[in-house]
Length: 378
Ligand code: PLP
Image (cartoon, rainbow, N blue to C red; front, side, top):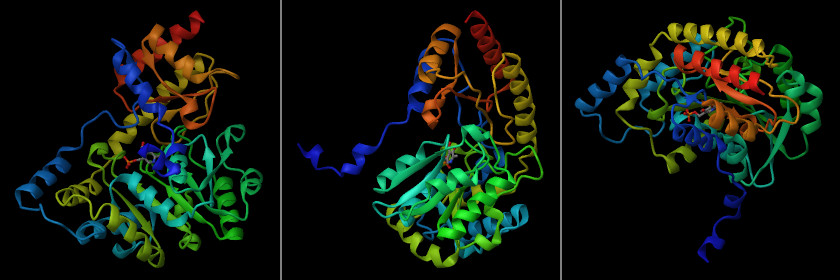
């Protein structure tokens, strides 16, 4: 059978259960979905208009591999103004979402047999992409530390083969922003072992505090850092598949070849749209998320659920109780209460569930009400 001749790495991959649960929820009549990993709003009109203008203006040809210079300049300025980053346009590769940027980062850094530290709970992509590279994902459980990173646990996971660590703050699925101690812990192991720090900052624009520390801001680790960004979440552009990778020029010079040979370039008509996106004020989106976070947090605690206060993204990650089978719980919740959450097991954290409040207020309130009644019935 030709199937047996496929790359064995493909057989180590697992399908995401997130899709399975979204499908279950969609199939259930009148089910309220608190499973969305994306804003429910459409892309802002100015961004859509920029794409239409680009198409009408004839921007339908091949463009520079790493993205139009005008877009890379706009990203470089945005990163400087918003976060104080010093990436030159030539240190930026515009990619097909953060997903491609992560793949370039992992494929560029990991050789078969290398290890990559992944703090969990985590977005599924990192582990699967690492497996695809023939590398070994080393999962570090953060649940006992309020989902923060602590030096003892990270240091215990480091071996001779450790090549990189992925950090995602604000985090999917917990919404937690890493504190200063977490950032220090990452820096300490990165410095001692000279490992790469892959910063998945896709939720960075959705934070509810001004003083959120970020490893990606640390200039002294500039050569270790691979910064992954996306247009998907802050600008409600998930379907556009636009993101970028920013890193030190010496590294980018090799990494860009991966992008060149798998994607060539991102779509020409989307370059101006992304420039328009960067000019958007996302303040009103963030204010609405913050309001919904406060509502949902108070409601979950009122139901007696233990939940860490998230400072960003649009997720809450309540504990369902020790030993609770999160997939069975979420299946039953859909069937008997008509509300869908994503089981924690999808993120490597059994006994938890992810609630997304990237929906409208009414959907959130109805979902919380149904969850509360379900828990009361027991
Ligand atoms: N990183 C995290 C933490 C995410 O939650 C997601 C999407 O859900 C991605 C990366 C992928 O984003 P993109 O749509 O830009 O590929």
